[in-house]
Image (cartoon, rainbow, N blue to C red; front, top):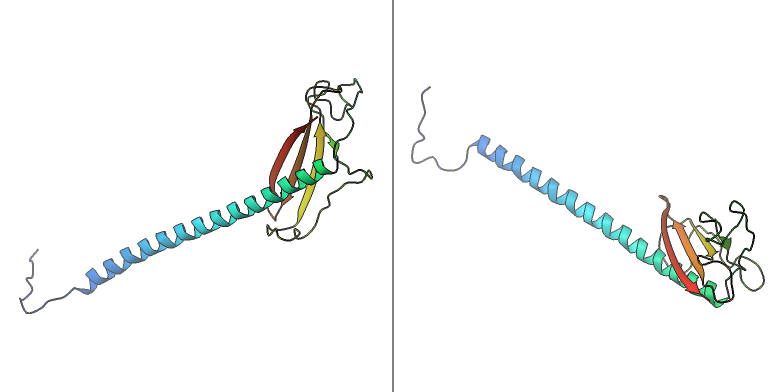
Amino acid sequence: MKWRVRPQWQSGFTAVEMLITLAVTVVFLNAFYTLFNSVSLSSSIAQDDIEASDFAYNSLQYGLGTNGKSPCDTNVSTTTNTNNLLINPNAPGTPVTDPSGSNPWTAGTTPPAPFTFPGPYTVTGLVFYPYGCGSNKAAKVTVTIVYGPNSRKVTHAAYVL
């Protein structure tokens, strides 16, 4: 194979060199674009989680403020006890109710202002008694928000006497 030497007066790049440079540039730009989109999506999801978490925390405080505590289930059956975790470790919990006896939370398609996480959403408040029934036994009150098209979940809990 015989090599051809370029004359000194021809300077610049060949078409092949330019195409290779262009291809490498496109690969790097595509990688940066993909990284940017991934970081943007993660940031958006994190912001939605923060909003839903704030809503869950506010809902928990509202539930506690309305005396959202159901009586302890004294049923000794391990299969039918609803909130005493000493008797039934898999108890489903008792829904939190306000003083009028109704559920203080509802579901919706969009969250109330100022919250901006995506809907639809549901709010579930439950009461458990992890240490059994008694006058000095703490109740665990949980609030769970399920929101958005992918059904993301955020839960907050507090112990009350």
